[in-house]
Length: 235
Image (tube, rainbow, N blue to C red; front, side, top):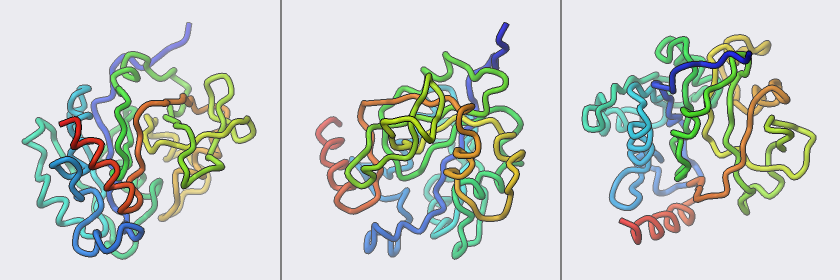
C-alpha cells in the first residue's frame, strides 16, 4: 500500500527577494511583488489564493527593497495568515533554492508550497491538497506550455514524472509542492543556488503535471500591462 501525507499543505513560501531588473524603471523604488495589478499588489493575489486553500502560514524571503514588502503586508492579519519573513542581504540574494534553504527553520518539517512572487496563475491548488504526495516523492511541479520568452522549455513529463529527456518540453510555472528533505539532502548545498539544478538532480522522481489555463510570468513591463488589462476586465 502506498503511504501518503494525510494533511493538505498549511505552509507556503513566496519567493520575493529578486531585483526585478527587467522591470525597470518600475522597480527602481518598488519591489516587483508590490507592483499593482488590477487594483492590488501582485503578491496579494498569491496570498489570497493561498489563504483560500487552507494555507495558514506564509514565509516570504526578503531581499531587494524587502522592507517595503514587510511594511505593506505586515503579519498577514488582513488575510487571516501568519506571515513570517526570511531576510537575505539586499544586494546578494541567495537564489530560489538558497532562499528556501535559509528559510527552512521557519517552514517546518512537512511538505510546503512554493510560489514565485512574480507569477500569476489561476490554477486551483486545492487539487493538490486532494492528491497528497506519496511518501517517497520529493515534490510536485506545475508545468505550463512554453511562453514566447522561453520557447525551448525546461523539462518534459514522462508518465507523470519530471524528465530531462522527454519531448515535448514545458516551462516550470514557478509553483511547486516540496518536501524539505529534497533541499536539505541535496548533495551540492551552498549559500546561493537555484531550484533548477535541484529539480534536475531529482528528475524521474519528482511528480510533474501540465496546466494549460491562465498563467503569466510578470517579467517585463509589457507583460505586467497585459496582465493588468486582462484582470481589470474581470474585476
